[in-house]
Image (cartoon, rainbow, N blue to C red):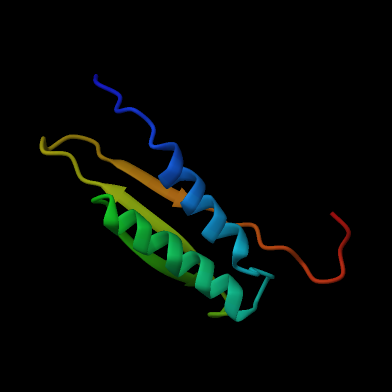
Length: 89
């Protein structure tokens, strides 16, 4: 299997944008970050969507890479842990 070279600039740009999103639990930021990640998964060719839970107050980004052969495919489930306001980290 060929592993492509890592584009450091793209990685740093992605991570920089990711950490700028204030993604506290059950806030618009949590929805923004999961939507952002789902969109990025689509850009790299995955089937991706956001899946709400906790009565629609939260959501996860889910991505799947459907292979060309009719065997098992790869599924990515991003379990995003948001920061909780008022907690020390």
